[in-house]
Image (cartoon, rainbow, N blue to C red; front, side, top):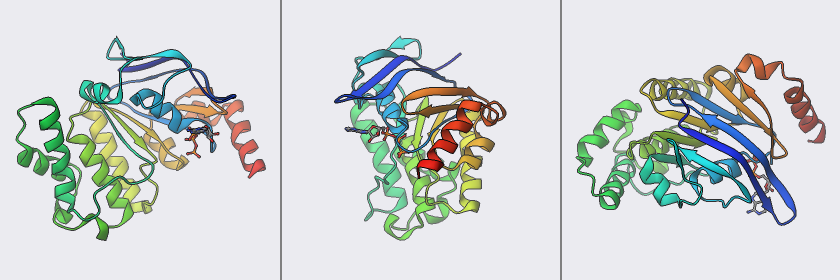
Amino acid sequence: MSLLETHGVSVRFGGNVVLDDVSLTITPGDVTGIIGPNGAGKTTMFNCVTGMQPLASGRVVFNGRDITGHGSGRRARLGMARTFQRLELFLSLSVRDNVRVAGDIVRANTRKRIDVEAETDRILGLTGLADIANENVAGIPTGRARVVEVARALMTRPKLLLLDEPASGQTEQESERFAGLLRGLAADGIAVCLVEHDLPLVMSLCSTIHVLDHGILIASGTAAEIRRSPAVIAAYIGAEGAA
Ligand SMILES: Nc1ncnc2c1ncn2[C@@H]1O[C@H](COP(=O)(O)OP(=O)(O)OP(=O)(O)O)[C@@H](O)[C@H]1O
């Protein structure tokens, strides 16, 4: 059963069709990847899912409910969390405080009775950040700052976790550990979905991959299926030729 479905989602900027009739699903327990050449519409797709981008047409269904008209805050309260391409952390705060602050916000916005301190410790442990919990985010490597963003998103106890280029700036070793973390989150029942340019990472990590090209969903399937898709091969060779 899918957690998120988009049905015929289209977006236009002025005269440009940036997403054209995109229907895809994201399933709990899976790590789903969205890939495609630069400008394919991947981030715009995330923005449609999280309520940051109005649709020209189409519907978004979450947990069986049509949420097309819902704003971002309402979607977050239903269980969506995302990270951004650009790091959006408080640089002058410690790793721990960056994570804790998200818990404070959740508590204030939802009146959920959560023990923020205990939950912060649990998530710092789960994400492997306990050793640098007291360091300022400004002083830690980018690769680990990406994990802090995920930790912060996890404080909201999401059902769906959307990650926009989470591996950028990570070393190979960091991205291997990161892949292990995402697999673990999926195994716990979270639907994890990432937009990512690191194709080897996506191919090894994601059980389902959606490929966008010029706003069109040209393929969906397993890594093996995607690798042998003539449309995908043509899109990537075309992109290289244009670069
Ligand atoms: N606010 C906007 N106004 C006008 N055009 C936009 C806007 N945001 C994105 N676009 C255009 O929409 C297209 C898709 O952009 P998007 O950022 O979704 O692609 P992407 O696949 O995430 O690209 P990248 O891999 O480079 O991050 C691009 O042609 C981009 O220039």
